[in-house]
Length: 254
Image (cartoon, rainbow, N blue to C red):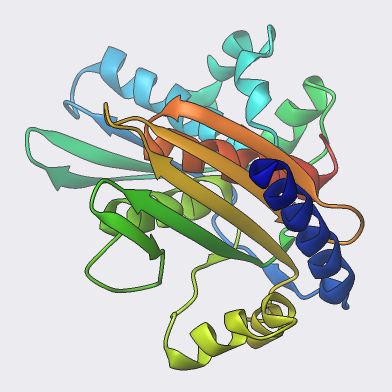
């Protein structure tokens, strides 16, 4: 009975927050949509270079379309073979025993590749998303913030997915003003305006005793909320799922 009451209360809160969050869109221009990255173990081996180029082009396809499910498209592997012919610029950054390869692809050529898959590029003007993630590990609970001692891994995972999926994601500062906004009525809507966000991705991430995580996501945007769970996985995979599904909803391909 207590769990049922709590569930109903959460549903009511979510609906109220959606009604409060309706406001004009604040799309943000995203750059680097035709830029992909890959970790390679050498610069001279053609096979390793080509593998990295395919990986980088696959990342660009996902970033441009907003749909990570294209990775499993049956026609994509053959199209990725074209990666060496689509390169505009290529650079390397040394890492320990490896290099980060950054590739800029020809926009028109990549657009034609997407057309082959029956996909149109998602506009570079993309919704800014405020991520409000509550984390509970084995030592206690905390809100994920843009800086602070706790949540470094989750914070890095959010930043990585923002870059790799081409979505403007922002974490709250969680100072006294933000905390006060959350505690008073309509706090989410106030934070949304403060951070110039068009949508809010809310999450609750709880660590299991064995070390995996159960995560519940709620995307607040125009219309009814989208709600889903990602259970029994690593926190970075849960964040990846949250960001990729958010991208599909916002790009209109879900």
